[in-house]
Amino acid sequence: MRKIIAVISMLAIVLVMSFPSRAATEASANVFPGLKYNGTTATCSLMVFGEHTTDSIVASVTLKHGSSTVKQWTNLTANGYMNFSDTANVVYGETYTMYVTLEINGVSYPVANITKTCN
Image (cartoon, rainbow, N blue to C red; front, side):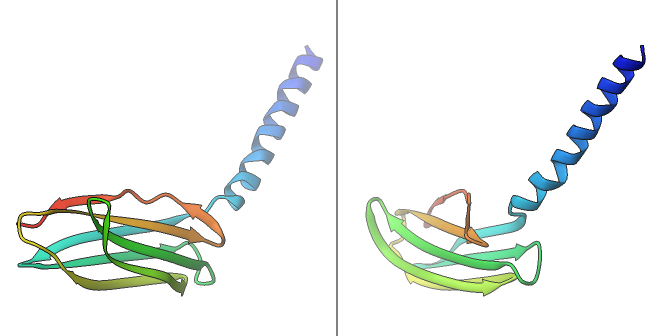
Protein backbone atom coordinates (compact mmCIF):
# COMPACT_ATOMS: atom_id res chain seq x y z
CA MET A 1 0.00 0.00 0.00
CA ARG A 2 2.82 2.40 0.83
CA LYS A 3 4.44 1.71 -2.55
CA ILE A 4 1.24 2.61 -4.36
CA ILE A 5 0.94 5.87 -2.41
CA ALA A 6 4.60 6.63 -3.11
CA VAL A 7 4.15 6.01 -6.86
CA ILE A 8 1.00 8.16 -7.01
CA SER A 9 2.75 10.94 -5.09
CA MET A 10 5.73 10.78 -7.43
CA LEU A 11 3.47 10.97 -10.51
CA ALA A 12 1.66 13.97 -9.03
CA ILE A 13 4.97 15.76 -8.40
CA VAL A 14 6.16 15.07 -11.96
CA LEU A 15 2.91 16.41 -13.42
CA VAL A 16 2.94 19.55 -11.28
CA MET A 17 6.59 20.24 -12.11
CA SER A 18 5.97 19.94 -15.87
CA PHE A 19 3.27 22.66 -16.06
CA PRO A 20 5.34 25.74 -15.10
CA SER A 21 8.10 24.94 -17.60
CA ARG A 22 5.59 24.52 -20.42
CA ALA A 23 3.80 27.78 -19.59
CA ALA A 24 7.07 29.70 -19.50
CA THR A 25 7.90 28.78 -23.09
CA GLU A 26 4.52 29.53 -24.68
CA ALA A 27 3.78 33.03 -25.92
CA SER A 28 0.79 34.65 -24.31
CA ALA A 29 -0.83 37.67 -25.87
CA ASN A 30 -4.14 39.25 -26.74
CA VAL A 31 -4.35 39.94 -30.47
CA PHE A 32 -7.05 42.04 -32.16
CA PRO A 33 -6.86 42.29 -35.97
CA GLY A 34 -9.41 44.43 -37.79
CA LEU A 35 -10.57 45.25 -41.31
CA LYS A 36 -13.26 47.87 -41.90
CA TYR A 37 -14.43 50.01 -44.78
CA ASN A 38 -15.46 53.63 -45.13
CA GLY A 39 -16.58 54.11 -48.71
CA THR A 40 -13.65 52.99 -50.87
CA THR A 41 -11.09 53.20 -48.07
CA ALA A 42 -10.12 50.09 -46.15
CA THR A 43 -8.62 50.42 -42.69
CA CYS A 44 -6.39 47.57 -41.56
CA SER A 45 -5.61 47.49 -37.85
CA LEU A 46 -3.73 45.29 -35.44
CA MET A 47 -3.54 45.61 -31.67
CA VAL A 48 -1.28 43.24 -29.75
CA PHE A 49 -0.94 43.19 -25.98
CA GLY A 50 2.07 41.12 -24.95
CA GLU A 51 2.19 39.35 -21.62
CA HIS A 52 5.12 41.54 -20.51
CA THR A 53 6.21 45.08 -21.41
CA THR A 54 9.52 43.64 -22.58
CA ASP A 55 7.96 41.23 -25.11
CA SER A 56 9.39 41.79 -28.58
CA ILE A 57 6.56 42.03 -31.12
CA VAL A 58 7.18 41.86 -34.88
CA ALA A 59 4.30 41.83 -37.35
CA SER A 60 3.46 42.14 -41.03
CA VAL A 61 0.02 43.02 -42.38
CA THR A 62 -1.01 42.39 -45.98
CA LEU A 63 -4.27 43.38 -47.68
CA LYS A 64 -5.06 41.29 -50.75
CA HIS A 65 -7.70 41.22 -53.44
CA GLY A 66 -7.64 37.62 -54.62
CA SER A 67 -3.95 36.86 -55.19
CA SER A 68 -3.03 40.52 -55.81
CA THR A 69 -1.46 42.52 -52.99
CA VAL A 70 -3.22 45.85 -52.51
CA LYS A 71 -0.94 47.10 -49.74
CA GLN A 72 1.59 45.58 -47.38
CA TRP A 73 3.17 46.76 -44.14
CA THR A 74 6.24 44.78 -43.09
CA ASN A 75 8.58 44.70 -40.11
CA LEU A 76 6.19 46.47 -37.75
CA THR A 77 7.93 46.34 -34.37
CA ALA A 78 7.03 47.13 -30.78
CA ASN A 79 7.77 46.09 -27.22
CA GLY A 80 4.94 44.91 -25.01
CA TYR A 81 2.13 46.62 -26.94
CA MET A 82 1.49 47.26 -30.63
CA ASN A 83 -1.21 49.53 -32.05
CA PHE A 84 -1.09 49.61 -35.87
CA SER A 85 -3.63 51.17 -38.21
CA ASP A 86 -3.35 52.32 -41.82
CA THR A 87 -5.54 52.68 -44.89
CA ALA A 88 -5.64 51.47 -48.47
CA ASN A 89 -7.81 52.31 -51.45
CA VAL A 90 -10.29 49.60 -52.45
CA VAL A 91 -13.15 49.08 -54.90
CA TYR A 92 -16.74 49.05 -53.71
CA GLY A 93 -18.35 45.60 -53.99
CA GLU A 94 -15.04 43.71 -54.10
CA THR A 95 -13.84 41.23 -51.47
CA TYR A 96 -10.51 41.68 -49.68
CA THR A 97 -8.54 39.60 -47.20
CA MET A 98 -6.21 40.88 -44.51
CA TYR A 99 -3.36 38.53 -43.58
CA VAL A 100 -1.21 38.95 -40.46
CA THR A 101 2.06 37.31 -39.55
CA LEU A 102 3.07 37.80 -35.94
CA GLU A 103 6.05 36.85 -33.82
CA ILE A 104 6.32 37.42 -30.10
CA ASN A 105 9.80 36.95 -28.68
CA GLY A 106 10.78 35.18 -31.91
CA VAL A 107 7.94 32.64 -31.72
CA SER A 108 5.26 32.61 -34.45
CA TYR A 109 1.80 33.40 -33.15
CA PRO A 110 -1.25 32.37 -35.25
CA VAL A 111 -3.67 35.10 -36.30
CA ALA A 112 -6.86 34.37 -38.24
CA ASN A 113 -7.24 36.01 -41.66
CA ILE A 114 -10.12 38.46 -42.10
CA THR A 115 -12.12 38.42 -45.34
CA LYS A 116 -14.79 41.06 -45.97
CA THR A 117 -16.59 42.59 -48.91
CA CYS A 118 -16.45 46.37 -49.27
CA ASN A 119 -20.07 47.53 -49.04
